[in-house]
Length: 375
Image (cartoon, one colour):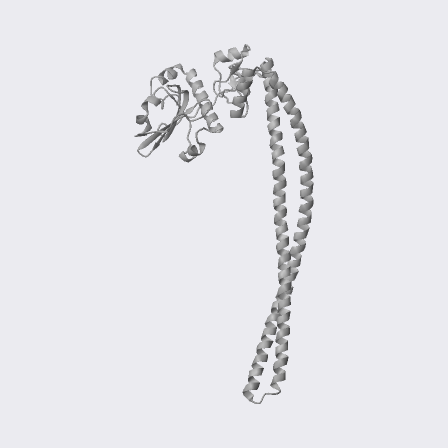
């Protein structure tokens, strides 16, 4: 294996571990913040329970004062009743005494209710105090663990960054620049080829390219643009009687309102994916670069079914499987997500395999509209 490839593999492993450690370092403070949020909620519950107890105590004192005032009135009215001259005056004083006695009974009932509720309030306060104590201890434990783990991760990161710099120094600058560019876009920049297939995007290499790779040529995958390498120790037997049967490719529906195509000869952009969609009396066309998944140009809208609206795009193209709603595609913005792009690339590889196995069908694909080609 070429030294550049060995260094790239070690660099990619170091990059993956660095990203994992960076994610872990970033995650630990979030975990502590979540516990602190829970702690603040428990503290709020405790404060609320204590405030409720204080409010009940204040209400009870108010009611006791009311009872004392009513009893003082009763005593006053009884004293006045001894000096009244008429029967009407006496009845009026008795009425006031009865009213005061009713107020006392109603207030005593309220005090009794508060006394019953006080038991529940005290229980809530004790539970909240216990939870707060336990959670306070837990958060201190989590903070200590986070500080310790962060220190360990930072130490590992320092070592890995040093190793990564060493690996990068031993790689051809042009190759390293290509690795950085693809790795930033796809997460990885180098992939192994086994049994003629790129293990990252699952697309089959052309026989000539595969033979050149086995011979030691430095190459990139035509589909995903990753740097590819061959390791003979990982190669599986490719003899016909050992090769597993390839599952039959799903055929896209000819009358589907949305159709995806592959063109290798777009005048402006070369290899592209086309998405044609019929909505009512109009059809739209989107064009995406095959390698990056980025949309090129603007959305083109024409009247009629897309077969009649865009015949120049369909003729000679390969029909693919793909069906995403307008809402999904709007959410993509100007770039096909990796999962959708890989799905299209994988289906294109399957279509090419079928066409190469059936020369007559491949020849016909160059002469007939592509909703029939490779479908």
